[in-house]
Length: 409
Image (cartoon, one colour):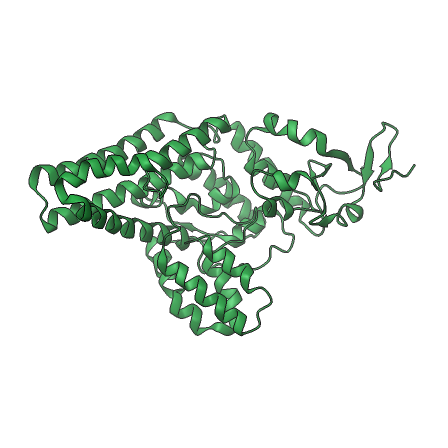
């Protein structure tokens, strides 16, 4: 018996749908998606989706199981929002994956995810994050003690600025952990601590408490103007650190459209790793394991090195390139894809710009978490120049790429 929504009614009274029918519902005003073979009508919910409309709309008319699993650690909590959206399920004879996605790759990756859960790789170690917080506070204390005890000479001021920049960068990696819901089991606690860290440890424009603490410490030593100059220089150092680290894992990855690929293949095309070492782990906030971070965005970063061999073996099995490069090569790739290189190759500007951004604003990419990179003026000016160049060359989507590069500034 045919139903009004287009599905068929089974003996159990459930609507069932084919992939052909589901894929017709992929417009902004008519969106369905599939999670674990269940079909959901997200047309109205997409506007209220906490992760944003564009993110969930990307999977309209498709299977979103792996993306949903990756970004929703608390399945029971999410189910109360999914239940009202449920309209049916896939026809029994339909495959679980849509289009031409590799069923074997999907099955093996889901088995890997289950194995990681069984091994406790999604469980955070509180001592790791407490130690990380302690070393940030120690750096800030040493920076202040340095100039308070020995004076405000130029060499000591420069050393103080370096210590503060290191503290700010490491605080950025720490807030990033909570922003990914990878520390506490409850999302609420992660968000609360995330806001606390942003407000008290990071120099965000809106975080009054940080500036009250900073100026109370440094105005007596440098005066108001000197303190402002000092924090601007610290900000200059820290923002460059952020841009270099976040870009060395994505350049020169060739990314344009996902073309309906499975989760594993899509993420491996979007990023690469930097070699593991104690310094590389610390310097990058474990984002040298960018592949694992993309595949398991809610996994605590101290477990990336444990899941990496499993991911590498799976990629080798399915002949999916798993790229690892040195820190030196990663930084060299950033230089090789500089502003001059981008603008000198304007005929291929769209490809170059996506490579520079390293992601799309969808589940497939991982936008830099937090606002502490958004004042990087060189990237801001680059985005404006590229936007104008693409317009002059009649690019079909200049504003699309302009928006993506702004995510870096």
